[in-house]
Length: 307
Image (tube, rainbow, N blue to C red):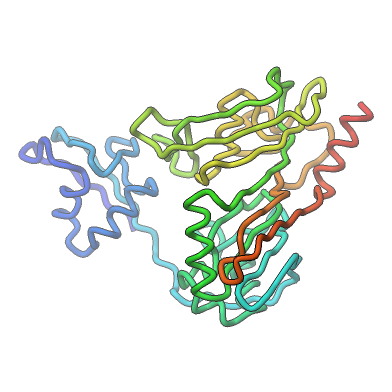
């Protein structure tokens, strides 16, 4: 449902979120906050923050997507299970699989597959995201841990928030990087004109995001990297690498025209969650898991070696 509203001159100086609450009485304040954060509200065509001050006379477009049904349908699918016990499950997600239902895809998700495999996970976390404590993008492959009990869920969420759980990624990016090691410390937020994308934002406008990288191998037009996350923002590695002028190979969103400059076909993009380390939230035993490089990235590296 779409709404087009015009700000009256008397509302000059009002906050966007409060003004909207006065206009849309059938939409809760929490729902409006979510709509603003997710880029469904535009002021004169631009995405703004909730605290944006109105000047009067602007046109405000509000898109209110239909809410998905609360119940997630289990879907029996093959899962690459790396580890499982009564509290948690570690899976190796293939590229092309969405982690949980969203506006772009309702079926064929990892969440639905895990729900079919372990029905008790329905009682853990959100109804549409059962057991999910962190995510991978659709075209990123690799390791994910999901909670099967409330104790595991809260313990894993706490470790991710405290950054004591670590994730290691492997990627092939465009261009030859000069530095052997580096850190990108730049805030990330919703793109001001495209709600599907994230972007580097000015200080105070986005959430802090920090990515570490180490060069494993250089090629004439590509670089093979190992990366670590100190934060967990949406599309973080992809946005940070693109900001350096080295987008992830095959990235259709942040790679621009360079995404077509691939020597071999690539399903998804060349980003893989290869390592995961955390303390078991119930037994308190240290856990470390690794995932081998998938064939789509191996083929690319073989071609680069032989090229």
